[in-house]
Image 1: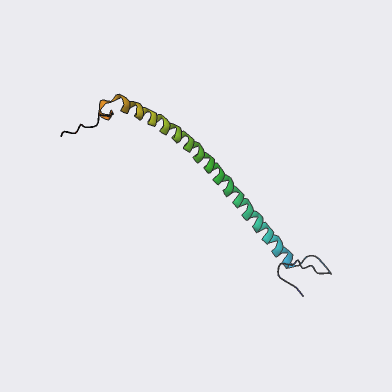
Image 2: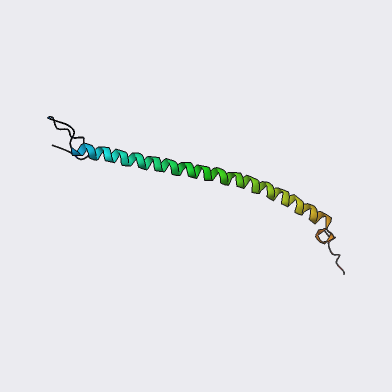
Amino acid sequence: MSSEGVLHIDEAGPATASDEDVLEEKQRLITQILGLQNTLDALSSKVDTVKEKNIKLKSENQVLGTYIEKLMSTCSVFQKTDPPTQFH
């Protein structure tokens, strides 16, 4: 009785062809795992790059926000005005 995925060895001699199938499957899985590890490394690197860029852009936004607030406070166009008086 034999089942798929089970290593078959002739009692009289060396491993049968199914041993080669198992070894090929193992090699295929190892190759796939290595490829996935490379993909994960690339994605991790990309995430780190995006995080750094995000931090830089947040800092730039804060500087620009402060600059705009100062401009608005010094420009008379953006100054608060007294509420209009109502005429009776």
